[in-house]
Every structure is written in structure tokens, then in C-alpha cells.
Image: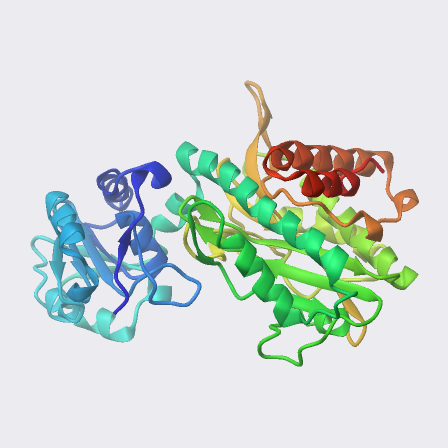
Amino acid sequence: KAPVFVHDTVFAGKSRVEKLNAFREKISSFADASLITPLEDIAWLLNLRGRDVPFNPVFYAFLYVDRQNCVLFIYKKKLSNEISHVLTQDRIEVRKADDVYDFLRQLDADTVSQLHLDPDFANILLKQSVPDSIQLVLKPSPTLLMKAVKNETEIDNLRQTAITEGLALTRLSKWIKENALADQVSEQAVALKIHEIRKTGEHFVDDSFPTIAAFNANAAQMHYNPANGQPAVIDRDGALLVDTGGHYESGTTDVTRTYMIGSPDQRIKEDFTLVLKSNIALSRAVFLKGTSGQLLDVLARQPLWEKGIDYKCGTGHGVGYLLSVHEGPQSFSANVSPVPLEPGMIITNEPGIYKEGLWGIRIENMMLVTVAMEDENDTFYQFEPISYCPIDLDGVIPERLSQDERDWLNQYHQVVYQKLSPFLDEAERDWLKINTRTV
């Protein structure tokens, strides 16, 4: 029963009419109409958001689009009179959610000879409701790629959101380093603390997933949740992994930092430095247009493979825009179909080391695909880090880094300080200056 709310074009960059017209143009090459079922795609197309799924600002609905018509099937009480009026103005008809099945049964093959449906996001009754006289085109929706490539307004907003999130994470970092061990803080307290700090940020909507705050051995579980596992108290030397993110009207974030607590084992610092080398290797990549994340995944793994270490997951994923924190089709992984990276895509870079019963180390930044160089023959792309939070230098063994790696780290920290320092108080600014020092 949670109400749907509008995602204004000042954040979305394009109106729902513009998006629907672009979608119609995409499907016209292979179908007369489309029934859109992925909730993120419906929310993105209509510039609407909801609260039906925890940590995912979507709402339950179906959306039918053909050359002339657009029908939203939804529980009508979720729509305010104002939203209903705006949808009507944009020539979007609203019907009850369960009417979708009768609607499909009554489709006329003379009008709609081919209907597109994404088989990965559609229940079997939808397929069975389509008359046999209508050809079903079963393939991923064009919206998958349309929403993955952010427009200029979205990119500008995301850069500002990265500052808002960076301020929250920097304040959390300072609090952890100064208080966690001394006060024997619990993992749950860390998760609550970042939410408490983040919710004061401009345009905040919600956390984008339950914060993972994992100390020592708990961090070896890649998707550990302190609310569901065996919560630890930070009461000894070691490493604390914090993976967290937020939904803002101006974008979605996902960042991981691992903090050295007390005087950790030298082996933890060695692993931390290895993970940092992996992160930097992928961050510095310059690659040819048409290259997929699947081909770049090895760059992050190579420093670890040289030491006989691997992590049993992907290296990164796309991120939605006030939508799911995990969004395709782009990713860094050896086990997915290749999708070329394009300028405007957001993707995470999050290699890690996980040693069961001991510790887990992960460093994660969101990155924006941009153009590096181009001429009449070729175009090359690169990554712009779009997460601003200091990497814990207490875990870095400088002599294990090459000069190029040191240069990257120092330049990144210089950007972090320049972006965040104007918005910090004097004590926070002093702390950040020390923790973004040159190595």
C-alpha cells in the first residue's frame, strides 16, 4: 500500500514521454508492442518510484506499450490524484493490476502481430494469456541498456551525490578510527551509525542495501549481515570491513572500505595492499571501444593470482539510478555474457581477499566509463572514480606499490580532499588531510 512518488526530471534528466518515445523506437524494429515486467524498468520509464521492495525503490506493476498506447497496470490506491492526473496528461492509461491478463487475452493480432516479453522477468500466466495468433518475441528489454547508460543530468547529479555520500563515509571513517576499539563498538552499531549520518544528506531516500559491517572472521563471509550472523564486538586488533550505500533522488551509491583496527597482524596489511593493487590495476585501465567487463575482469585478479589467491565472485556490477544497487547488463566477471562498456555506464570495482576464520578485505569504488582518447581509427575508454572516501593508509605497505600505483593513490586522495574538505568542519578537515596524505 506504499504510495508511488515522482522522480522529478531535474534528477531524471528526461521526461517519461521522452523515454517512452525512445523505447517505442527501439522495439519498432522487432515488435509491435511490449509488455514490460521488470519493476526497475517500469519505474525508470515512468519517472516514478515506490517502496514495495525493501531497499529497492520500485512498485509492483506491469506496463504495456505499443505505437500509440501506454497502459499501466497497478493497484490504483498507490497513485495520488496528482500523479494520476499527470499520467493522464502524458496519455498513460491506468488499470487495475490484475486486469493485465484479460488485457492480453483480448489483444487483436491485426493490430499487434508481435508482442515483446522479457522471459527472465515474466510469469508463465502472462505468456499463456497471449493469443496463439500473436507471435511472442522473447528477448531482454531495450530498457536494460537504456537505463544503464546514464544521461548528462544523471551523471552531473551522481557526481554531486558522490560528494554527499563521501562526506557521510568520511565522517563514519573518522568515528570508526577514533572510537571503535576504545568503546568496543558492535558491528550493528557501525551499521546504525552510517544510516544515522547518511540520512541527513541532501536528497536522501533510503539505504540501498543492508550495511555489511564485518569484523575479522565475519568479513570472510562476502555477504555477511550483522543482523543475521553471529555479531561481533570490535574488541581486539584486526580489520573491519564496511560495505554500504544509499539511495538519493540524485542517484544510488555502493562503497566498501576496510579499516585497520588497533595494531593488526602484518599479514592483514599485506592482504590489504594486494587488494589495493588489484583495485588500482582496474581503475587505471584504458581499453578499446567494444571491450566488455568480462575481458577486463582479469586486470583486478592478476595481482592476487600472482600470489596464488582468488575471490569466488565477480569484481563489479552496474548500479541503478535511484533503482537497484545491482543493475545489468554491464559487469566485471569471467562468467557472464559479454556486454561492451559504454560511456555513461556506472560500474563498481571491488576485488577482495577472504580468508575463512581470519579476515576479509575489500576496497570498492563506483566508476564512470568515460572517453580517454579517439581519432579517425579508434576510440578508447577509461574509468573515472565516482566515490570519494579515503582509503585507510594504515593498511598500506608503501614499498609494495609501484610508482604508478602510488601516483594513482595520491591523485585519488587529492581529489577526495578537494571534493570534501569545503564541507567539513575544522576537526574533520584536519583528520581528512592526514588520512589523504602522500605515500
